[in-house]
Image (cartoon, helix red, strand yellow):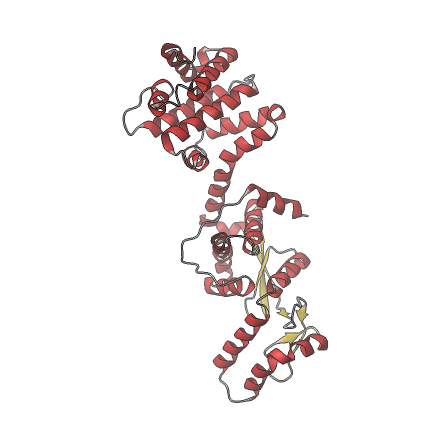
Amino acid sequence: ISADQRLLRWCRCAIAAPGLHCEPVLQSALQLLVTASSSSNLRKGGNRRRFCAFVLQDPEAGAEEAALISLFEHLAKVLKKPTLAAAAVVHCHSLVMRGVKLVVDSTEPERAFLRLFANRASSREWRSALARCRPDMGELADDMLSHLDRRCAAQERRDILLAPGVGANVTARSVPHEEVCAGPECTNAGVQKCGRCKLVSYCGPVCQKAHWKAHKKVCAKAAGDSSRAELQAALQGEMASMRLDSSNLRVSQERRCEETGFDYIITADARQDLGLSFENAFMGIAFRTAKLVAGDRSREPQQRHGALCRMLDTIATNAVRFGVSRAQVHTQLEAEYEPFNPDGPARFDMSKGDLETVMDRLP
């Protein structure tokens, strides 16, 4: 039956006009098309040509993608049927995914699926049908939804970050400046400065004593005739070497955010810091996800770089209206995480697992 070309063409026409047919007929048509597109005679060569013939309705050369999009739109109309069975929803997804593999990209079909369909208006019908049938489909519905939702989420995130009125999504408030204790492995606030150089702060005499061996060279330069620039360079080298295997600044940032309720605190000047809160819930979750990836040393360097660039864009885009420059934010992020090139190629995609981790940590 699945080799009957006339029957298969009739099935495709039925899908193009779902209003003329009842749900059982449409489900049977979908099942026949899926069976034919996966049958052994398709795999013997010419499978792309045959799929184009009976599913995509013989598109002209170069118009295969447009025909596949047309199929997606027709199936969206089928999915509007309120009593359509879960099996038919699975057939719709299988048919389009096989078309993507045969016509567009066989190596990364999920990425091609996202590019072609996720931002189309008709994807709403797909999501609605998957949500409706989720009790019968379980995790399969979640996997199919991810083919649509991940790209939509990424697009929404870009729209938020690039919107002209993005400041309306963020509130900012000045908070007292807090130095981080320079003691090894300490993340407490530095409440007293070194009495000799006045360049570093400590939470108490224990940390000051523990840090003295590493700090005394810089302290001696401060007592001499060294220029301010030389002192700052020496101090940055000292702090970088001390924190090479630790994350004092980052842990201190997390502690302060937890205590104050802000999403991020920027060191604006020596007297006041700036606390940012994302009123847009999705922006806040996306930012926390980027922080999670950027701070995970087990990730690939490209992933951490992309996450840092996304954090920089998010903070700087919103902080500039409060008088904080992009360069300030970049310097602080490098101190908290690692050096990175903000102008280089970067890509950051939020994975389902990372999002779930962030959501589980929300209060």
